[in-house]
Length: 147
Image (cartoon, rainbow, N blue to C red; front, side, top):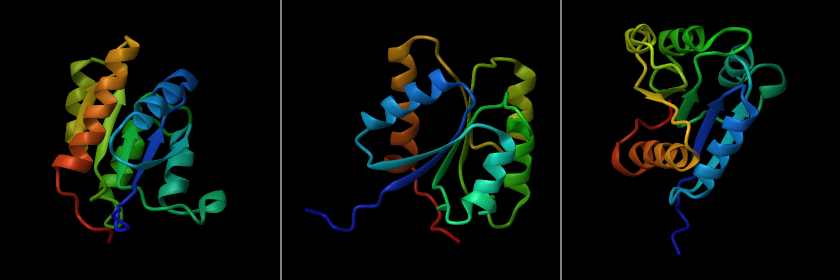
């Protein structure tokens, strides 16, 4: 048994309870051991990332799954702040959203998103996509060590 097994810390920034549930289920099926942390708006996401208030003991996530359409600060604002921060910019951010608008795709990459994924409507497709994201970032890609 490998006692050095790294647990992937994932921050899901999502306000739709149904999408939260499906994402949790998809990650539970993943071959990657992970802890999913969930916040439901942009302001709470930034408090988590900056370890402020109720999130003072928050872990630094290894990956952020970010919806664009959020209450409070939207996903674009969260992405811009994360990528502008020397302490946070190396955390991969996958925009996981319902939008297929070219403008959203371009703007997300202009703000240095690591990937842009449109949420499939179908449950099996959605779980497959989330599993592929998890697999890529934790089994294929080499991520920088925490700062």
